[in-house]
Length: 146
Image 1 (tube, rainbow, N blue to C red):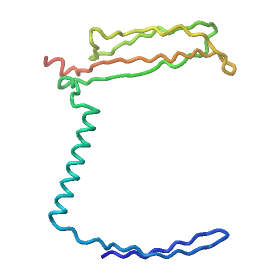
Image 2 (image 1 turned 180 degrees about the horizontal axis):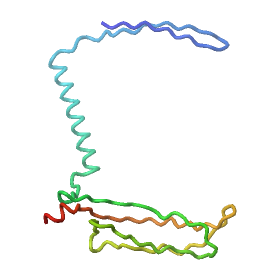
Image 3 (image 1 turned 90 degrees about the horizontal axis):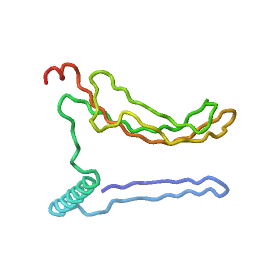
Image 4 (image 1 turned 180 degrees about the vertical axis):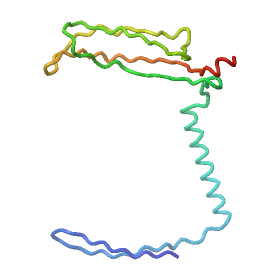
């Protein structure tokens, strides 16, 4: 049996002292009750795991062995320091050696046209242009073997 003696003292205008005792007076669990409770928890955790798997899924697309897959999700937020208005950004992705992209993957893009806004002493164009890019890396050793 577990017995816990506690004392709480409050501070302030009215100081109070609280004393109490906690006792664990539960009866000892029978082996079949304990087994039933453990099975219930296993079932509960199993259902929760299935629920989480249903949210995430199991079908992750994996690149072939020896190839690194790189996913880039970014945003062109703003540009400043330009003297003209109605700006747009034309961007290009240049892949270094041993890097490649899918044939339909665009390696360039153009943001929308954006007017500048005075922010302090500078004119700033706020684009908020999201983009995604996927590239694959294969070391020279791996590419020679294929």
